[in-house]
Length: 107
Image (cartoon, helix red, strand yellow):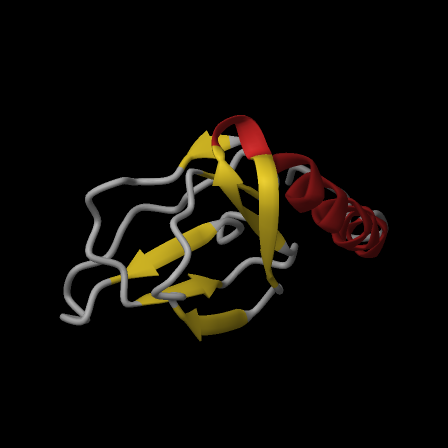
């Protein structure tokens, strides 16, 4: 037997305490923005999942923008996360603004 029955509850407590820390260290696997087209079968990959500034796709037919992560994301009107910003709160989905063109994103 790997661990004595006496130490098994202690091991469970240690794993339970460390698991959230490991998950936070590795990041939220759902963090980042996902762009959705009118056709629900067409969607982008997760943008800015690594929490770095990233270029916004130019030719994607965006209808809705969803943020399924636990952190807010910011869309920018200029590259390099500059210019005016548009915030997409965590766990939120919204229609893509028609009169604004985004150039970069960060979460």
